[in-house]
Amino acid sequence: MTILICGNKTLDLTHPQVMGILNVTPDSFSDGGRFNRIDQAIEQALLMEKDGAAIVDVGGESTRPGAEAVSLQVELDRTIPVIEAIAKRSGIIISIDTQKPEVMKEAVLAGASMVNDVNALRSSNALTVVSGLGVPICLMHMQGSPERMQDKPEYGNVVDEVVGFLNERVVACEEAGIANNQIIIDPGFGFGKKIDDNLSLLKNLKQFEVLLLPVLVGISNKSMLGQITGREIKERTAASLATAVLAVERGANILRVHDVGQTVDVLKITKAVLS
Ligand code: 9MG
Image (cartoon, rainbow, N blue to C red):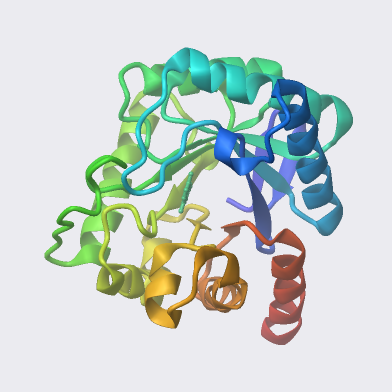
């Protein structure tokens, strides 16, 4: 469980690692045409690597609450050239953030060596495709779909239900031939959850240890932080860093974040105190 094999690279999870977020949706870059967007994306990935990220998570479809789905071709056009370019210029592990098996496959051919699926491989054919790719997969919990997930999330016991769902998806992966030691689990903060649900999940993150798998946590800049602090997205770095400490204290192995350099510093301090 401590070392993940990502193609020809390894990810050491004996200590927490940082996954930098690289959204390649048009609203993520200043407008200057396709090549300019690719250049900006590569620059961001190289900076994340320099700042200490082990992984860069490339996504071409927004999963924010209310976001509309995009077509396969649009997602491929946004992500594949960026992945090819990062793979050529950097040794960072590239993760593809997608729900579409066709994108997973093309991304791995282009140089990605991890799959991050907010839909936990429930799309048709996704289990079979990932089983054939042989790369680590992050299975995330989501109630509903991004378009409607914040309409009316309902749980009896949120922690038990999320752990139970992830356990079912782990079993489905294993039945499809995906090795248990290539699976990462993720409670899916903000995905079909009210503020109290998110807080219960963070408070009780240790309960996810029952699945004996690495845990990825993504809270960076999310609306739960805005609800607590009253701050806009661009002003949520301090709140995000506080949750990084809390998550790592409770056993998180990978933090998916926007502010890589600051999170890496926080992890160094956390490690010095906790070890
Ligand atoms: C794509 N994406 C947005 N938020 C995320 C989260 O919390 N976890 C994972 N795995 N992916 C996410």
